[in-house]
Image (cartoon, rainbow, N blue to C red):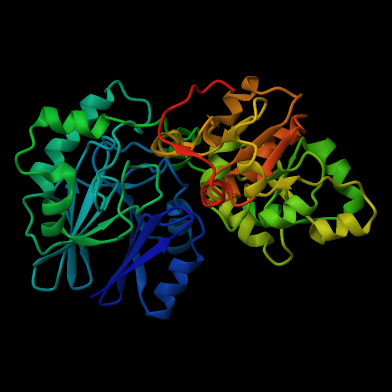
Length: 468
């Protein structure tokens, strides 16, 4: 028996490969299927099952492409009704895999079709659970991401309480918990950076598994403090349920080179936006006017999903040469399938052709710290509200990047704004969006909040008004 966790840091997502005696199961695969096919071929195994724990909201699963390539059965638990053929497993059903078995545990709550898969080893002993978004390390799945349901989040939280108590907490303490996500995912509130643990340890440390916890306490604590989910979540969930274009076709279209002299024509014909995925430093030194920065080396896919409202938006990519396929792949993971190509030669080709380019003004944290007490000083903090509430520079106003598309009316095109985040990634994204919409009066604070704090800028946890 072989179990392998395949963890993708950008999405904080875990897929799983389980193999026994020449047969394999893949749990919650990502959009690109080649790694799973190659893994099975390397081990001389046939992929028999593609096990889906639920309709994922934070990424587009590779279940359809993987099934088409391998002939494996797509398995969902009860209550799933997708727009394609599946094996609809019953609660308690046993799925044979080589010399082991996988038991289906219907665990509604995160969503009503949510299912946990229990691996029984060669001796029939409970080995591990693959809990999707039902149980995380240190947390449980948020109960407000289900596709179009009449149930309230409190109703779903009640179902989750029952699922945990009757299906999961009754298992032996030595069972290993393999969740669908780790720290950084928006599918829970406070996920651990650990990506697996024993069930026994989770019973001791996970707030949602307290033995003396009442149903009412559980519902209250699980629903308390939930921030609105990213806008792309319901769209990804619907793609996972209804189907999507093959990844190979998306990749073929998105990796077409666009010569510099055809870029404007391409933009006009397709209505595409320019997405610059290089480093913060490279973008600041020079970029094509009106392009948006979201760096590939940061938390790329979730920020794309949060900030580009339309999954069908045509996109032209600016990338470091050689990274174009990586960018298109990561866009597709969150459902942005309409990349129409990349600028051949990247920004350097644009610059070499003598085309107009823009820059971004960055000021040092020390210079900004010296201005904090000035009467006309305007400092915006692009971090999340929870980060801002914990501590921020005195006089700063919270202007979260997450909600920039709905808060543009809070800023003016005159005067000077200084903008920062924690380290610099989010502030560059925010200023690029502002510049693309005609606001050129924003200066980036180098090093962000960390550098401001080190430079002696006064810090407080007093919550200032959030009006710019």
